[in-house]
Image (cartoon, rainbow, N blue to C red; front, side):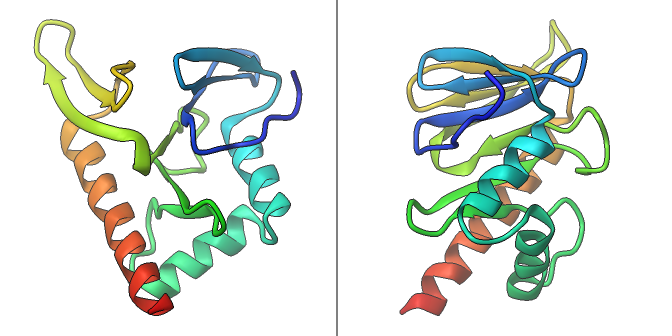
Length: 149
């Protein structure tokens, strides 16, 4: 599969080898022949902007300017955030709406993101970074809601 349409059930987009991505959707996983940033960008374009445009919008709305979350779809209220700088090949994107909790697995030395459907993803990113990104995404969501009122 080359093109993937992000939807409310999309949990995460994780980089794989050879410029491919592992997409978690509901309880399913798909290999997509595209980098995570390309999937995000194509979906932003599909919804009227670009990844860069969405990043600039978030910077304007929240005042944050590093590893900013983005509104992928206004209509579906889908906000994704990066786990590292989007310039890095190792960047993963997580859907704020579907996250239930996070914790650190000491034995494996990985952070774990648990989604509402009980799917768990292990990431080699510090738990502080993930929780900070969740906070940024929540601030974006709050500001968007306030601006619509």
